[in-house]
Length: 268
Image 1 (tube, rainbow, N blue to C red):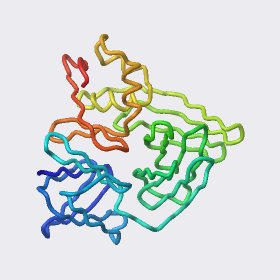
Image 2 (cartoon, rainbow, N blue to C red; image 1 turned 90 degrees about the horizontal axis):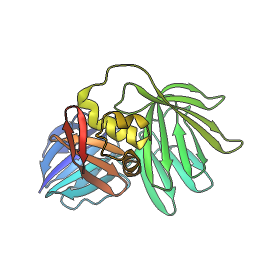
Image 3 (cartoon, rainbow, N blue to C red; image 1 turned 120 degrees about the horizontal axis):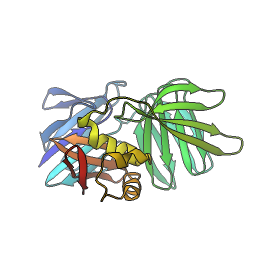
Image 4 (tube, helix red, strand yellow; image 1 turned 90 degrees about the vertical axis):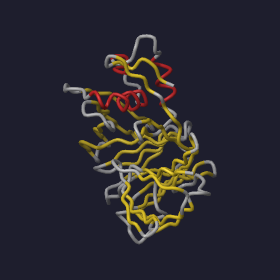
């Protein structure tokens, strides 16, 4: 069976003495084999994966689709803990290259780059982890992460302006209030040219964040509220061999998007 190994992080993979790189722009296809994997940020941390028998865990997700095994690498088992936060409902563990959350006896992990100014809070069933580069939200109801890129941050007032992934024009402003346990979120857009090749990514991340602008580039027959509900349950979208896949805690799922005349006409 062929295996496709991919990630949003940066990893070095050794397969039959050949050293290969995996990152947000590069994935690897290999037949059943045993590979060694290490993180570019923490090269001393190395794990061995038997691709023939791999199963989803806190370090990676795995699913078989059309007789191909897809493996999304999240981390390589780093053990040097930078910060730990014990909140009302969960335990938030922050490492150099990922976040690990223990919730209801299960473990959920996601990409992250640690900086000394990293902070974490739990407010109304969601965990917020951020520094001056990344902002993460873990939804304890849906059991999924959302990530953003920090543009501006005011640590004193806990105000953060973030850009959505794969979008140049869409932002969210977030203000955390730890005194009255509330979060204020405002959706923002700046003018700019939309790039056609980004359309599937815009569909995913704007729907995931409930931006009404989704209605501008989908056919009127598509119910945007259904898109919001559906994509809220996933974390990321990947293009592999000209096909799209979406991921969440239980693995990788195929996504078929039909585009006609610069509009999305069907989603399956």
